[in-house]
Image 1 (spheres, rainbow, N blue to C red):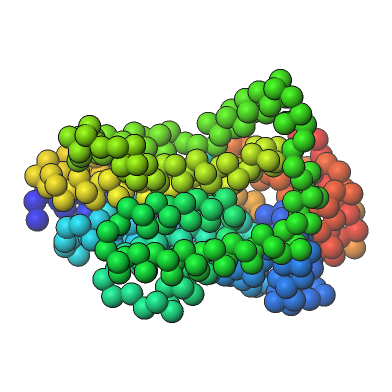
Image 2 (cartoon, rainbow, N blue to C red):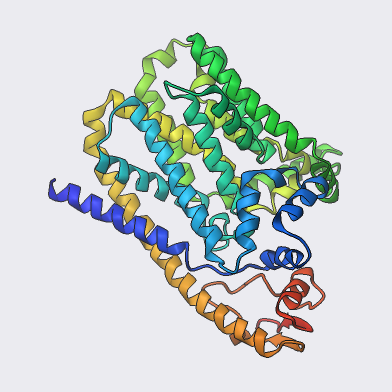
Length: 440
């Protein structure tokens, strides 16, 4: 190995270690306690079945099972460790997509997997407050992993039809917007692909996703939750002025939620398309464009699902992980084809680009690790306060909070002792009540 190759490998290894360590420096969030106190009176399975009928049709998917059973334990890091493993596994599946076009050496697979992990992380998350490090929200990582797995498995040479259907079914019991988007991709690929075997496999995968989607959207819990969160945003669609205002809000939040990395890989994917098939596209019909840009169109479809209730979307940055999922597939599929068609050019530019991403990722991951370790120590001290004040009222002072600069607006305890999360924390730790002083 050359010095450059060794440096790149060591950078990838350091990035991987920092990514892995971040999974352990986590703590229970406010929402976690809302669920933990319910486990005093029911098992996680009872909780999930009840939620399916009363709150969320996704409650029977694997993501919810892993999240709730991990939350049932006393180890805050268990859910995030599993989420991190699946996050890296998603990147490894993307590497297998590259390997589908051209072979990769073992060390290349590792470096590329870490590279995709870094891009996924930098595209999906701004800070500690995001899905990967949030126990009750890590189900979104499971959704993304299952979608990667179901789609990429359907592209293999020897596919077990039953296994593919089951995998697609499990992946389909996810956020409806993302499932609708991947169904769109499967339809486009079905009509574009010319091999009958691919069509049969695509139909099996499509059926699995569709059944999973129906299980979710026909759930009484999904209907109840949709209505409880305001239902259809009638005000937004009442006249052109309100619609313009809502669209402005929607787009404003959309650009706030997305990191600069997502725009970088989106542009890179478009660049690779025109490098790979410039002459073909010039002479193609419009359907060819739809096929080439199917993943970007799917990314937009995943957002369109939230348009009838725009106000819900603009309060939920974690929902954007599905947008990242489709953009990432667009980028990697085009990168894989660029590598197969222009291997010499790829080898000349990839090392510098990968090293740059690793350095950026290492800086951010180290900063997050430093902040997380600080927060965990503060939380451990705060739990000691909870134990000392059992059966009493507790008012957290500024120094008892996680505090600046890491998480100044820590959300698990508010200034209102009657707030649902405050009451859940109080019940879980046996406090009479809890609130925080106003931050000055």
